[in-house]
Length: 190
Length: 190
DNA sequence: GTCTATAATTTGATAGAC
DNA sequence: GTCTATCAAATTATAGAC
Image (cartoon, chains in turn brown, orange, blue, green):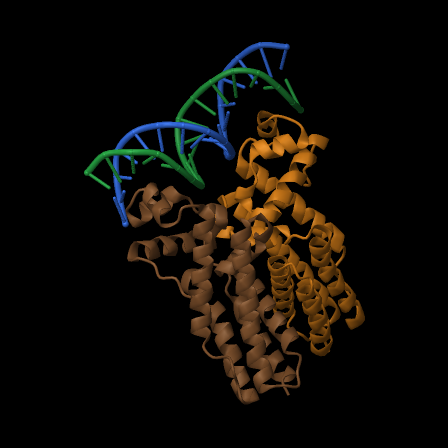
């Protein structure tokens, strides 16, 4: 079901994703994208007729990338659950440390009510899938805990830590969240 | 040091704040604001010549509102620390439940690198002041804990919970964060 | 796939009358 | 303080040639 894109379309998606992560949906313009990838804006419209199409494509591709790098969620022990949760943390860590930006759906999630409906739907889908992955990881290796609540809280904390880190140009907020969550998880899982 | 605004200027600030909370800085336009408050766009420019002026004013006023409603931070016991932290939680709760939107600096914080520099500075100031208030609340009533880390983590979690709640139209993410944080705080303060 | 050309709209912003 | 009038620039988007 994964759509494939030509190299140029991928360049466009890369640029669009960067801009959306910096300033939100309105921060991407067809002309700017075109200039950045070395074509004219009409060519960008050829690949993605409407801006909502572009938004959907960016979010879908992003969701696939993330789920792929998360890998299989199933765990067979509490030790493995912790390993899976470390992967989740790593996703956010990579986003923040790699680009000094908030992650895509952290940005677009805040703007949900402002987005074209199909884009908002993709953003919702991202959150459902990431939370689903996390729940599966927890409940498969630690069946007696409230996997849904733990997943929700971890995603909340990691996302907010990224936002605070970007807002203040101080990544220690993320370090604190990571440390605190790991300790909290090991006290919570049993 | 608090600037005062005419009733019309306040209406403009109210409308601008709403739009910024929905879709970020770019989601407010002078014409839309003007229509909403019943004047022409030139009149909005009279009150706030540049868009950055408007942004600064919105964030400054917001910061003052929040700090005023937080009240005095000093606590004389762990019980009082918990009361102060409940007020902090209440700020975010009110923002989410009152308007179904993320709080202002949650939105603008993510966009920090995209904002006009003076606006970004005001957003940074918001975070410093709210974190400072929280640190004072904790350290005054519970001197032996790491107030800075607790403050950072609470703000991260509350903000991320709001984002997740807005992105998924599901406020239970906030309820979970609130519950979890309260339990975590009572285990952490001693 | 990419281009030129262009349309229709919106944007931030200013000058000057009332 | 608000208005009319206007501007230059930027925006999304389309038609049609190559």
